[in-house]
Image (cartoon, rainbow, N blue to C red; front, top):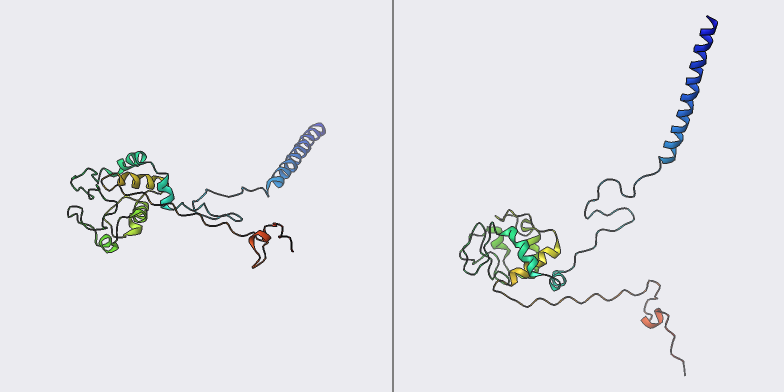
Length: 208
């Protein structure tokens, strides 16, 4: 009887020692990793500024994007539009208006008598480069009551390609000039009113 008790007690003691050892090891493992966290938790969301970081780089002006635009790529992207628009000269209006010669034309009028929404008629103006860029990015952002259900093209380069293609359809307007780059900022340690050459450390002219 005593032998059985001693054997059982021995096994219980051994199991307790093993369990205690495992608890100690696992505790140290999780303790070491408790302060470790990803640099940016969760999924990346476009436009969100992270702590210590900046937002995504600003989009280039439409003039700069048009200077690099490819009308052939624009024609390929325009395939998304052909379920609603025709692009041939003299083409009939469909769900949307015919787009031949659209670049530079009036917004919300003409187009063979197409029935534009009141909001687009109120927008007025011309289909210039900036207006087309705005429209293609978000039709409802430009005219909330538009009949156009297309959500828009988020990629600025793709919009420029489409606009370049539309410009080949009878309008053929000269591409706009690319805006001059902004002048570089003065060094942070330059004193107010100090000449740029002096602020940059250039030697002063010898005094006579």
